[in-house]
Amino acid sequence: MKQIYLSILILFTAAISMNAQVMYSEDFDATSVADGSGVEGSTGGVLVNIGDYPASVDWTIDASAATLSASSDWAKTDGGQFAFRDTDGDIIWDSELIDISMATGAFNFSVDASNNNGGFEPTDYLDVLYSIDGGAFVLVQDWNGLGDTTHTFLGEKNGMDWDGSVPEVVTVSGLNGTSTLQIRVIGNVNAGGEQLFFDNINVFEGAPAPSLSITSPADNEVLASGDFAVSFLVNNFMVAQTGGDGYVQYSLDSAPVTDKFDTTDISFTGIASGQHSITLELVDNSGISLTPAVVQTVNFEVAGALQVQDLAGLRAITLPSTDVVTVAGEVFVTHTESFRNQKWVQDATGGVLIDDNAGIITATIVRGDGLTGITGTISEFNGLLQFTPTADTGAPTSTNNMPAPQVVTLAMLNTNAEDYESELVQINGVTFDNADGTVAFSNGSEEPISLGTDVFTHRSLFNVDYIGLPLPTAPSDIVGFITERINGYSVQARDRSDVSTLSNESFETNTFKIYPNPATGNTVNITSSNGEAVNVVIYSTLGQKVLSATSVTNELNISNLDSGIYIVRITQGSAAQTRKLVIK
Image 1 (cartoon, one colour):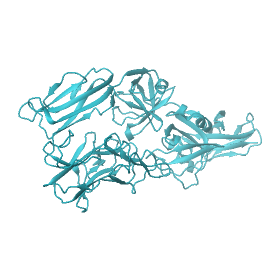
Image 2 (cartoon, helix red, strand yellow):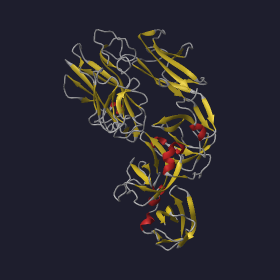
Image 3 (cartoon, one colour):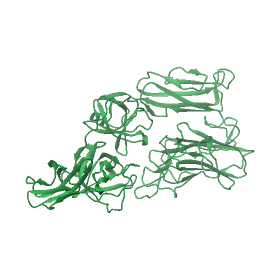
Image 4 (tube, helix red, strand yellow):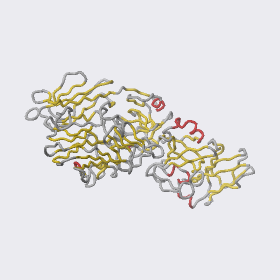
């Protein structure tokens, strides 16, 4: 925390005018508090104080109403601002009691508020409040129409997300008091991909100063292309060639300054890959720097270009990598979600998750579509490789090319699930261990599955058609993609058709029987309650296909099978069921 009292002239650039007198300032940078200071969760939900908090700061955090269940759930300083991530409840940040007794008249305060455009819900919000002389806290309501009477900002309002890429400067003016002011910020956000931020808290007398902020590119951002635009905001200063307060000067790297008489984006083309910096400054009508100077520099990188032939080549790239990568071959879509515009794709060599939160891919993409020449950057999130597109793919290059799932065993997945990450697999004859006829699939629930002594995890997707259905009590074949989170790997069925015992409601009226079971001779009988023929595939407990037959109406020859336990998959039309068979 930094305090500057009334008798001190302003020495920082972009918040308060040279005629204003500052009573308090907090910008959460490294000179005031170590980055990463605050609270975070841990396994078991134990709250952990991190960084310099609370010993070296004067502000406080109350996370008693939140649920911070992992180290990725936090309220902390992050990159020179304060961030709320996956709080699942209110977290309250309170400033110290700010001394306003030296104010000679009305005073003001301002707070910057922003977010990461993470795909919010109406239940996500950021609130700014204040208390004067120990009185009740007063909410700043519905700032710029982005909140309502109960919240300063809503993550989503009327079906539209709050676009927080450009900070909103919440300013409250004309306040009066005799002793103290306290500022409170409350954050509530319910997912890891969503973050809310606040920064640059200032309490001052006098008029706000000219301010300048570069909003894009972000500091240390890696740009996918040398063709880009620089966006910026100017407040309390009229930029004009004549009749204004002055104009903007900018310089890329060490190039001479260029005069700019408006606040539209500055476009660059053909900038070479590597490290660069852009500097913008406000000057008066004579081209002379303001006092104090209002200037900002942002460092950024233009990524290099790389081409690989397939997804195996993509997955072989060493991380971290800033390269923009093009996959030359065609990849095929196995699943899509509206959340962050995510798409799972694979080819004959591997799979990857396309995380398209910015909506770069504009065409309608469905399962089985082929995409050629996907271009983007790669990173890891909780261990899962993610591909972030930087260019639109255009229309699909083929359709109806759904890859067949690879038949694997739990033992194979437990040995090296990474080999199958983001690929479509089929696991036969597994049991949902918690199934008792009442336990149901729920959004994001993790259900242990097993076959023999091998155990793995099924993780439910959100809002799919099996949510709310009871876990099947009979052995099931599961089709799904392999994903990774902090707590390990899991398989995720895409819909109820991916779980054999959920795939068709005709199971309730049409059942299949195997007898005798255990089998002691060379044949078993397989029948259906409707008397029609069935198709049969028998697997070993290692997932190997050992026998298949079509149009079975009763007797099936099993003389070539050894004694042991087998998994039998029986299908009839769109109906399918799995049975366990014991041969003695």
